[in-house]
Length: 127
Image (cartoon, rainbow, N blue to C red; front, side):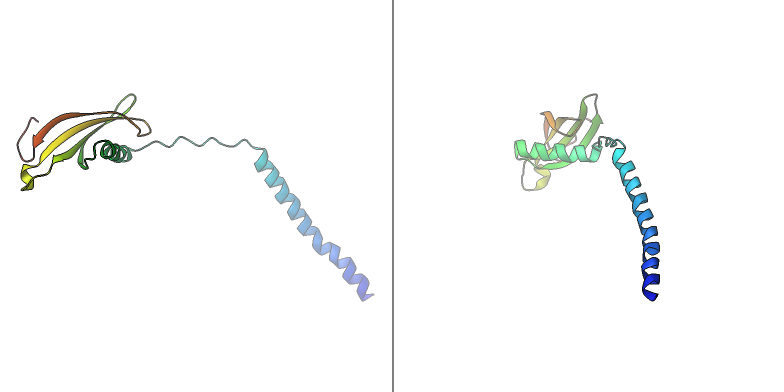
């Protein structure tokens, strides 16, 4: 008789596990049936755009950015002004600097660039 009891008890213990498995399957089926959400397009921040613009200017001209002096959002993307050292001299107060304007699209990809002016470091200019 002991054998009959253990056999009879075994299905009773498995029943809750089956119910749990069915509930999990229903939840999974529900999740799979729903439409996936479209990820919102990630906007590029101004700081990221400025860094990308300076990096692309370096690749094109071989001149490393001294600093970003202007950043403006436009209808088509961004306008970034970057100052670079065009000619290094000793002492460095006589370096020749240049101001470049870079146009990039909304993703930070270069559209155009141009040199606005050249000037000696430390010489007061137009403000």
